[in-house]
Length: 622
Figure 1: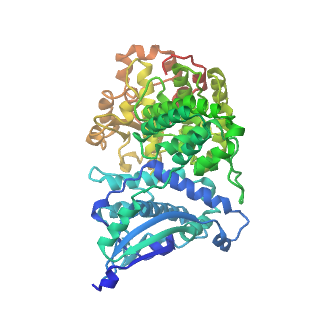
Figure 2 (figure 1 turned 120 degrees about the vertical axis):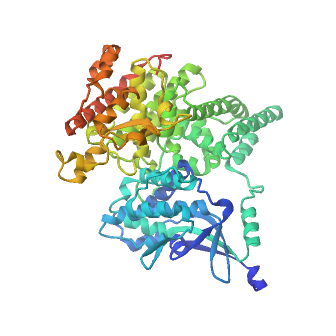
Figure 3 (figure 1 turned 90 degrees about the vertical axis):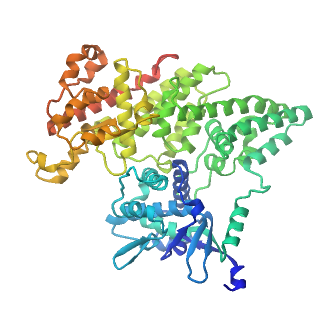
C-alpha cells in the first residue's frame, strides 16, 4: 500500500443519503453487538421529529425542505481498504444501525402513500434478485429482511443480543414516531431526514489510524459538562468561603451518587428537576417558534438556570443560594434515585413506578411528572403515594392509548403532559388525587375499544404488559401474593403469550370462510393468555378441549376457562369484585366465547384502572 495513502485521513460533512446510498460496511469484531436501549432510540426519534417540526408547515412544497433547520447526528469513523474499497465501521455502528431501523419504518409507512421517497437503496442493494443490506453481518440478515418486508420479526431462542435489541428498538420507533408525521408530512420528513441530517464521516486508510481516531473521540478530555458549568455558577454566587466549600463537597457527593447509576444521570436529573418544578413555558407547535423553558432546560439547563433563578427560583442572595442547594439539591437527588430504584425493582409502596418502566412515556416527560408534586416538607409515606399516583396516571394514559391503537411518543403528547406537570406541581396528596382522577377520567380514549383490540406484529410488548397486569390483579383479588414481575419479568422461567386457538384454520372453517377472519379472531385480546415458557410450546398446537386441563394448572385468569375451577374454588365467587366482573367457564371456545372474553377483559380494565384509586389513603395496599 502506498504510504502516503495509508497515512491519509479524511473528514467530510455528509447527509444520510450520501452516507448510505449503495454502500456496504463490515462491522468491526470488537463492537459487533447492537446495544442501544429504548431510551436512546426514543430520544433520537424525539430530537429528530422535534427539529423537523420547528420548520415544517403544511402549506410548504417539498423543495422548501432544503431550507429547513439541519440536525447534527455526530461523527462516524471508517477504516477503508484502498485496494478494494471495503469499509469497516470503527465507531458509529450503534447510530448507523438505528438510522437503518428508522429508514425501514419510514419505508414501511410510505408503502400505501401516493408520494414515495426512494430510500430502499439506503437500506440494501439488490443484485440478481438478492437483497444485500448495507451492514454485512450475517446474523442480522433474516431479521433485517423481515423488518423491511413485513415490519415484523418473530424472535427465536437462537437470536443473539443484537437481533433481540434490533426488534425491540424497531418496536420503540413504531411507538415513538408521531402520528402527525405518518400521512401528509411523511414525504417531507423523509426528505429532511436523508438530506438535512448531517453526519461527519471520518475515513482512515489504515486500521492503526482509525483506532487512534476512535480512542481520541472517546477521550472526553477537559470539556466541561452542563452540570459542571452549573456548579461553577452556583458556587460563584455563594460568597462565604465556608459555605461555598460545604456546597462544593455536597455537590461532589450527590453527583457521585448519580454517576453510580449512569454516567449521564446527572444531566437527566437536572433536566427532570428543573422541568418538573420550575418550567412554565413550552415551545408552541407552529413552525418558526422559539424554544421556551422546557426545550432550553433540555439543551442547556445551566444557561437557563442562570437566566431564570431570580424569577422562578427566588434565588438572589448568597444565603439563598446556599440554603437552597444545601437542602433542595440532595433531597431531589435522593428521590430521583429512589424512583429509579422503584422502576427497576418492584416496590409495593409505589408499584406503578415499576409498571411504567415497562409501559410508560418518554423519560423527558415522565421524570419531570414524577418529581413535580413532591416537596421538602412531605414525609416518606406521602412521597411514596405521590409517586405511585403520578405513575398510575401515566400508566392509565398509556394503556388507554394502546388499546385504542394510539401512540404516545413525546412529540404527540408533550403539551398534554406539560400541562399536567404544571397542574400537579407542589400539590398536597389530596389535591393531587383530585387532579389526577379528573385528568385520568378525561382521557379521550375509551375502554370501549378493548373488544376490538388485537395482537399484531409490533404491539407484543404491550400485550405482554396488559396480560401481566390482568394476571397479577386477578391473583391478588383471591389472595395470591403474585406481583406484576411474577408474569412480566420473573427471575426464572419467562412467561409467553399463548394463543388459545392453535394456528389451524382448517379446524375453524365451520365459523370462518376466510383465513384472514380466522387470524383476526385468533389474535383477539379475548383469545390470549400468559403461560410459562416451554408450557406454551408443548401444547400450543393442541385443540382447545385438550388444552383446557393444562389451563387449570396455571394462573387464575387461565384457570377461569375451566368449569372445574369454579367447583373447587368456591371462595373465588364470594369476592364482590369477582361477582361484578361476571366470570364464566368455557367448555368449548368458539367465536362467541372469544366475544365473551373480550367483554370480560374490558370489565377487568375498567376495574383495574378505576379512578377511585386516587382517593386511597396512605398506607393502603396498592
